[in-house]
Length: 332
Image (cartoon, rainbow, N blue to C red; front, side):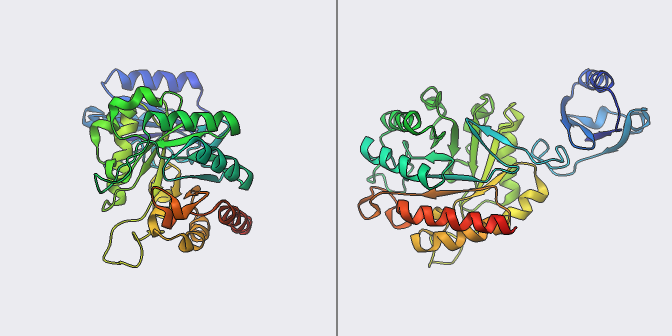
């Protein structure tokens, strides 16, 4: 349920209303937009007398939210959310360029790539320290040592870092990580999501291999219900019958997410296509479709990469993508 507050209502009046509603056993979320203030109610709202609430002098209207996701719902928060990440942000007027290797392999590798992607226009550095792999015999990442190398690259370049978590027990290792990524395979790892909800870290939540947008938003709700509203959504392709690409990039997810939710959404064309030659056209399409950013895999030697070399761009190719995307953004 949401209550739309009349324009000109004082902060004290809103505070009094929120206190009264909290006394009814409800969680209250305040969203101050450019024209209205929204009071969002989460919990058993059946005990609230809707007519009484709507009759209050400061209340313009009362509406029930039928969708199961509440905090992530645009009705709850009409204005776009902007997620602050270090010296940059995701959402609003800032287009995020997140780039780096699929897997951190060595200090020399990650340093070279970090400097190159920053020079090309990257706003954040991504790199896998813990790597979920289909085969147990594939390279699983450098783990804690990989995070240390990312932190060295952050110190050298100033770029905030993004890296994936596999287990809630690893959270202490992520204390200095700027954005914690939840991979597609963990999108519905609800116990992990609950633990991330207790942090204040920015969380990059990837859509699962065969999950609907509603399920993606419900996973975001798990994090936000715990008190952490710093959620960034990521469309990374879904599994279909098509075999020419690694996954099928669902570009319709971008406008639909913007319609349903206030959370920013970025696109990962690398995992979506699995082919470096397809990354640029899909990046351009994502930017034209209204994405809030891109996450692109970049490697200084893709042919010898320990993980996903076929979908990784060279630093020069990434620079070309950034330049081209910026031209699209200027047009739209």
